[in-house]
Length: 123
Image (cartoon, rainbow, N blue to C red; front, side):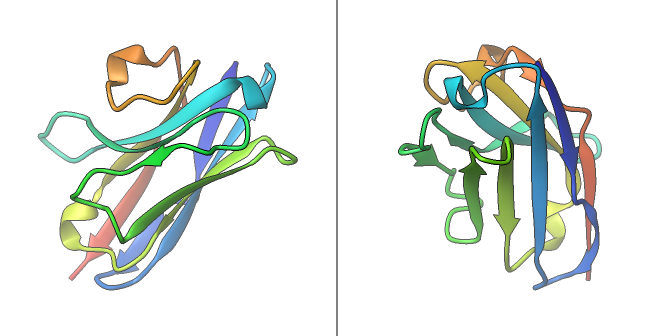
């Protein structure tokens, strides 16, 4: 399984971006997917997950809830993270990850990782 994260860039506070994670090398629907991020000098943290199949189960932590939306398109083997009302503290490298079974907020539960895409939110 390979994952490729893309869509990062420079955006102003209050702006929006949509990240994509392109999946290959496996049966996309069999995998739950997650987004994590790592800000400079900080530990990598959980951002969102979506379950396999039609993605019925989704979860985002309080820090991004209401601003970030995770989704998947099984016809395109792609997962998305729509990020609205961006804040300076959202600046980080964003990683996508995949695992079989259900989604998880624990990064150690994921088997496959993309290379990361940088999001910079300027004030």
